[in-house]
Image 1 (tube, rainbow, N blue to C red):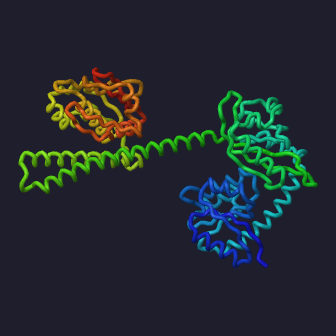
Image 2 (image 1 turned 120 degrees about the horizontal axis):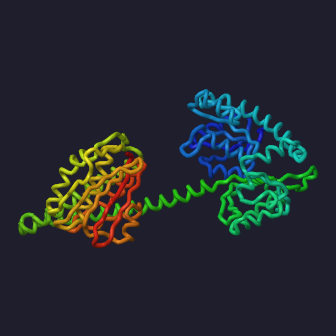
Image 3 (image 1 turned 90 degrees about the horizontal axis):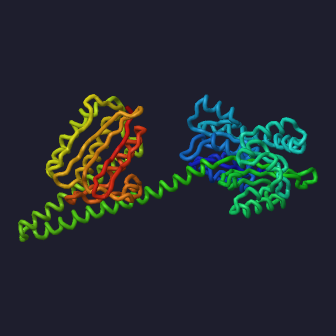
Amino acid sequence: MNRQLNLLLVEDSESDAALIVRLLEKAGYKVNWKLVEDSSQMCAALSGQKWDAVICDYNLPRFDALSALTLIQQSDLNIPLLVVSGCIGEETAAAMMKAGAKDYIMKDNLARLAPALERELQDSLALQEQLLTETRLHESDRRFHVSFTNAAIGMAIVSTEGNYLKVNNALSKLTGYSEKELLSKNILDITHPDDRANDLKKIEKTLSGEISHYHMEKRYIHKLGHVVWGLLSVSLVRDKNNEPLYFISQVQDISEQKKYEQELQELNLSKDKFFSIIAHDLKSMFNNILGFSDLLKSEIKTGDPATLEQYVDMVHSSAHQTYAILANLLEWANSQRGKIPFNPAPIALQELLNEELEVLRKSAERKNIELTILIPDNLTLTADKDMLKTILRNLISNAIKFTPKCGRIELHAAHGLRQVEIAVRDNGIGMAKKNLDNLFKLDIINSTPGTENEIGTGLGLMLCSDFVKKHGGKIWAESEPGQGSTFKFTMPA
């Protein structure tokens, strides 16, 4: 007769998972299995069902075996984990075994899988019986009290009514309450109001025997009033007559993780908006190119030469603007993916500016703008030459764009404490504070026409910001309407 096996498979390949199941079925198991690929899916699976074993691929795109093992250990579940891998070295395998994995099997030697699993299931059964005995005796076990008190995560013994009976130092630190203060409280006293109903529902299911334990993310109210996110694991201890005695709770502070998740969500929303804006700009440019090229095609033989020349100018201008958007977008995308080499080295700033200003001076001369370098001859800094050129080129081009004819642009630089501060100052049209606040935001593209209706891509300042941050510096702007603008950034000295 086939033996029932509840198997949790941590694997991103359905074909590999199916192969493992077929091998175990041939070995005499009736396999009830579930496939998960990441941390959230595994947490849900561990909470929702009892598993006899976990078989895990060593490395997945969004997960790995060590993380899976950690989740099992944090859940206080005695489930054997076996690692299956196509390429795992001896040192890695030894490290996994040391961390608590029961065995590792190479994918080219899956014949070992069924015997290894059988061994671990027998060991697990024996271990479960041992742990059951230890659980009944744990109140008098000195080692439990020592580990309880000194555990790195918050731990508590809670009555079936929800009152704290014993707490450890980590829980006091997590909540801000002393041991004495916590022992006078119910769990609901420090639970966020929005999480109380879910907590009570889990407790009721556990007391009724519907589930033996549960895991949930919940918010605690710190003594100082702020919210602390915790990953809560709760199991119920019963006496020999199966009557509930008390709960054992473990709480891991996941506030930083939740903060990063929120920041990532906001960043993704910003990027979505950013690309929507870029797509809109590109579409407008291509509409211009297509529209005027259609007019050229239809009027090439009969149209007025002056009008045709105007159409050609529009197509030419739109094509250049489209190319500029794509070039800046590609450079920005490469910087986001770390594809742009970063090779900081000592640089003589004035020498670099003299190279870069050769082209920019022509743009300034067309508007009769005086472009002046007020930088000491011997001033040096440490930077990636290409990135620094991009920063200066964009800031100076912007200054030329927003400075009227016969205006003035100055470049300043000075040594500070372990850094050099560089400034590009103009006496152009300036900008309001609300525009200053949005200059370097991802989801707000600034592409205001210049004093001569010059068109920008709106990506230049994003590149400047990214490249300055790459150097560990900061970038900001100072401006008032009608009073010009000064863009400043810092670089290592």
